Image 1 (cartoon, rainbow, N blue to C red):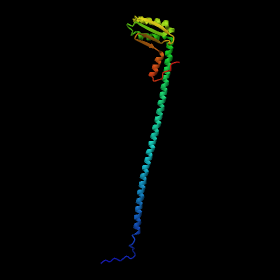
Image 2 (tube, rainbow, N blue to C red; image 1 turned 180 degrees about the vertical axis):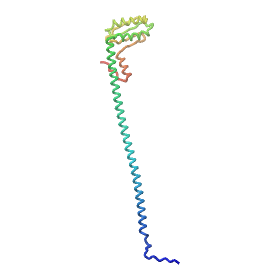
Image 3 (spheres, rainbow, N blue to C red; image 1 turned 90 degrees about the horizontal axis):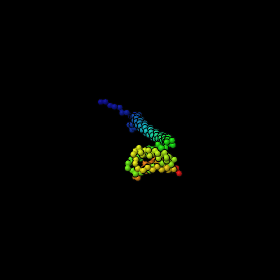
Image 4 (cartoon, one colour; image 1 turned 90 degrees about the vertical axis):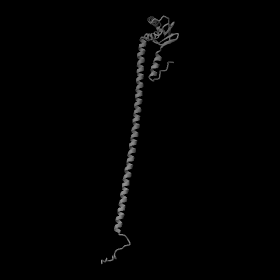
Length: 200
């Protein structure tokens, strides 16, 4: 029969302090590790949010800057286009004005041809031109009327207020007007430009 000696030097009221310390140390280490892992994860999430916010802000700024540059480019393009149109109109006015000043009868002849090609059986035609061109315009229009077979009565009148090169052809139920100022205004309107104010 095996007998065990009674161990009087063991205290059974308290657990072994070494084992308890190990358990506490392990629990503490686990808590620290979990807290560290949570902190790392939250830090990464916060860093990612900040990076996304910075990226969104940078993209917004870039978009605004691009829109501003495009707006400036559009404004410059519109300004250049307006300047080009103004220059072209000034040049056209100059060329047309020089042509009319040197050959005002050409414009009158064009208007007369346009009118006479539609006039068959019309009893009379009245032509109004600047009074300084009365004699030349009368000879020109009579010649064109004969060439186109116009058999009605032809009257050519001088008007001091008309511009040289302008003409007004009138018959019983119609007419043709060649008015330089109105042509310029129509061209400007078709180009989207304001027409010049009439002289006072």
